[in-house]
Length: 57
Image 1 (cartoon, rainbow, N blue to C red):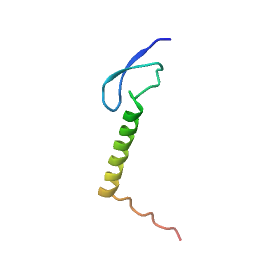
Image 2 (cartoon, rainbow, N blue to C red):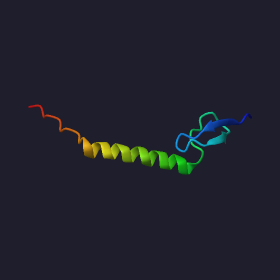
Image 3 (cartoon, helix red, strand yellow):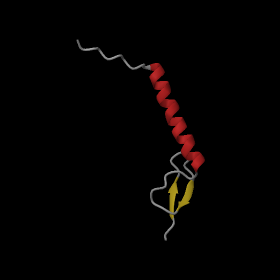
């Protein structure tokens, strides 16, 4: 089995992966990335709140 050297999507550190699907160097980086992504989306919603849809009669 070949080891693949990749860059973590969150912290940009290199890590060795046993699979080609790995994106994060640790579960902590995975959680931190998704928490950061969620916070950005929440901030966007508070700046630009979604418009209510018009009801059809």
